[in-house]
Length: 222
Image (cartoon, rainbow, N blue to C red; front, side, top):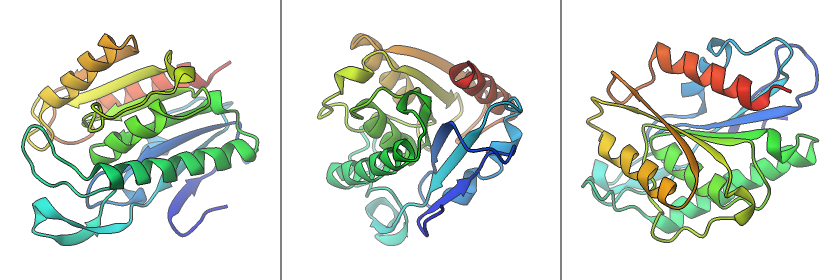
């Protein structure tokens, strides 16, 4: 069932879900931001996938003059180093992990659960997936950065987690160099990373949506 702080899209088939995809939105948005993505992915009819799109709480954001808005954590400065409130980020990741545990309790196997995130939500997705204590099905990081690389304690069970990183080559909000740095750092740690670049700004484009649909189908079929 849907809670006030999350949007849930049940399988189109009407059958019980046996797979789940979490999608975490970016700064200033909410779960509805990615609601149109689910039907646009073109997933096979025999895939009974539940989509969980949580809403971030409202927080004052330093780089936006302290104005409160939906945010997974505070961003303290907009430099390339992206100094953030790691305690808030990790608290958001723990909340997402709790929601993942809820899906497991409802009968969805952990290895059929994928965590995806865009921009600020992607930073939370990195933390939530890489530290999750059960083997997951995959991680999709879109137009984002690995904010907790210096303090990350990975879960050994997810050392072979398949990671898909997408970034636009004209992104002025989260420069592509940050996406590439995450890719390089994770590869250096032995993770299996696939990197896709798109001719776009800080957004999601049609070719990317098609690629996401194919990737999810590959991860969740069979």
